[in-house]
Length: 553
Image 1 (cartoon, rainbow, N blue to C red):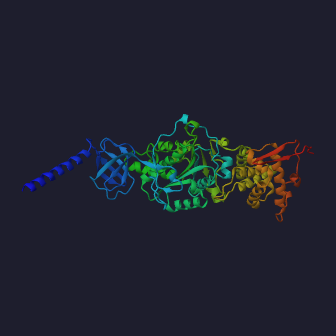
Image 2 (image 1 turned 30 degrees about the vertical axis):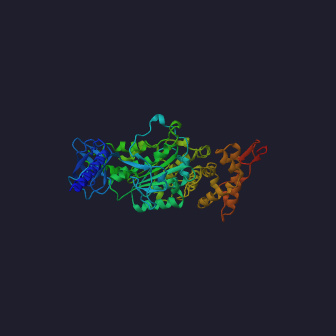
Image 3 (image 1 turned 90 degrees about the vertical axis):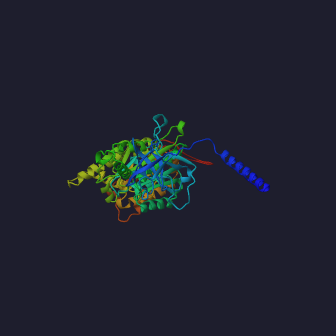
């Protein structure tokens, strides 16, 4: 009996020590978990009560594990837009605060990946191990943090780089009807950034899954996915996912911009983004305005696009160049969303459907397109050769419309029309074939000095490719690459080179009489009046070419 009592006292001592040890582990702190209840669920909008301290754009978690974003903060309830499935959410189910606003993973881990607007991978390359996250809605950099735009963001498209140049940090709108080549310009611009130390972000808003897959395949074909991130919100996604997609894209771009890198971002397209925001606003019972869009639709796009800029040296010297796309209906650029975005951006490229149907690609309208940065975003060689191009095309379009009346034309008008036709043929460019800026300046040289008048229209494309091949082997091309500009001697050298090339080229065309367009003596070599040297600086050696002094007779 005594032994039994002794064992019981030992056990009670053990139990008490175990209980004391467990109690000691708990700190004297209280944990508060703020919860609310679902009042109603409909069309991806959940009305919640009890979340009195919730923040705007804060993520809240539902009982089924899905997340939503608090978008309407009223006195008695909160309007939450769902970011996941909501079929099994019922009335009176519990909603918890996360105390975190909607954020997306940023960093180099996203390069070459296809992600949704929440940063989840959509490709088959495994999970994304992002170590940093940034809120998707941030204030744009102030005026004193910015710098003027004067560094080219070359698209590789002759018609754009010559007449409507885009600079790093610029916002250039691409606008036009559906199926007029808007996305093609954006994709070609991404392909042209290869080897230029520019990271790219392509944001697909409301696109078909097959379209996004084709774009990814095209970029992979030209090794452009090595510096590109695709943020995809497809047509089947709920409106809230499409609404946050461009904000996620610009947040990913800002990470690199703040570290001094240059970024190109494509928003394809903001028309569908505006429609998704209109859907959310109407479901949240916000008052509708013009075309049923909410009153803050302008602010929605302005606060998005103002985040694209060029920062000064004190803030990293990075840049974000934005190419938003807007789809018009029957060419109406005076509609609500097009006029909004036109007023926010630094210029627009208007895609003309009639030009597109006639086979003029890219179908950029010279009269309605503009770049408000202008020649500040061009290398000197391009400025020198492209200065008169817009005027020549404007004259051609005006006289082309006039000539349709069938009246007899004088010789000068005929020459302008023939020259205009050849310019239009010269600026035609196949998709996914960007042209280097120096090569573009050589083609513009042939246009400016009317060398193309010798070439029949049917042979312009062949002439263009063979001219570039010929000039690449010439000594003056190396000088142009080094100097990025033409001087008096270089212009003379290029003229003489082109004369010899054109003689050779038209000599190979059967049944062609060049005397109908000019005197063959115009292609005879001329000599310079002064003696100058062309120097080519290359590692290890230098080449000097002298032009002898003589007189022109």
